[in-house]
Image 1: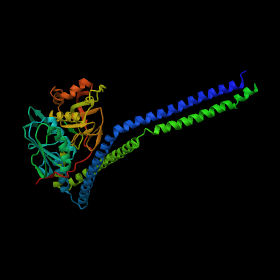
Image 2: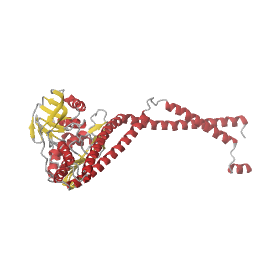
Image 3: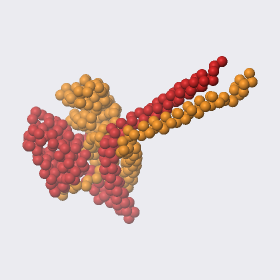
Image 4: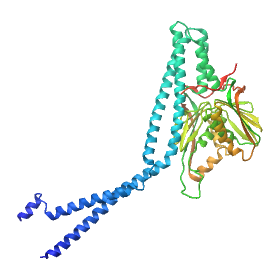
Length: 227
Length: 252
């Protein structure tokens, strides 16, 4: 039989041990929670810029889609009205046809935009990058040294020169783009900043730029309608 | 014996009860103390909550994007029906409508099928080498752009990337780490590029050692996936939106 003081001491020791274990468990639990939060925080810090940029692009895209929607509603209303009065609105159809032909590069177009002049040799990917950036900035029509370009126009390097849809072009290169001059200017500055370290480049805004060259539609040989 | 029986039936001795109470109290105090400790290193900007808000905005905008595309497609179908009806009313409308149908194929609004080639591309392995800042193991939007350009040059008649049709207005770009195409549609790997055309011509373009040389080199170094396969039966979808010109006015 143990004495009373000895029993008290033993009880106090047990209490201390249990308290320490509980203290440790509490800290471990929260440290675990904390590290999970920090992981999420790290992901958040990595993603915030990307997400913000994505939001910006989505806003822009949705505005464009809304614009397309409004245009189609107007076209629908015009066609419906003509049919209701017993006629047919051929002009509404022709208007749509004109837009598609211009988009495909089959019609001469004019409008505000800018002209980039490159005084020395460039690589194909540099021109493709520039076109990609300008298209992303809302560029609607392009020509390089007088040759009309759409996204399907191949541009390949041939030594110091470029082949644009099979046509050889050489410096100085003049790239014309129709669209919002302000937006195009930002894209042009981005594209030409690296070029300017080795060749002379100038970017000039135009209030009315004419792109007169056109593309012939390529007949489909292998592809057939239906998906 | 009685005392033992009572314990077995649920009566807790005072010593155990005291121990439990002290443990619980200590645990709670520790929890509170550690919670306080946890809250201190959090930055005042609360980036986590901000990211959640941004992510929610993306989800909402992408849902809106899908709704708008669906609305555009629905309107296109309605307009098409009305155009076909109009074509039965007048010869000029009929003529314009026939040309319009052809032009829709040219600009990529209609789905196509035929022989061609499929190229697949995926990220390679991160070498975890602090001196390697190239990110050469990652597929970049420029890689997709280069492949698409090469396929056009090799005679492709229609191309899609991850089921997104490449149309005259298509551009590939980054929004941070996201690869975007056609009205801010997010693309993620593995990437599948489908091109309709003469399979041998398309394949010889891709196989040409002078073409995509940098991409092929990264494939060897980092294990970045680059493979292609010829096929006699492939499909590319039509563009899921429409075209509006705001600046380029047809001349004449």
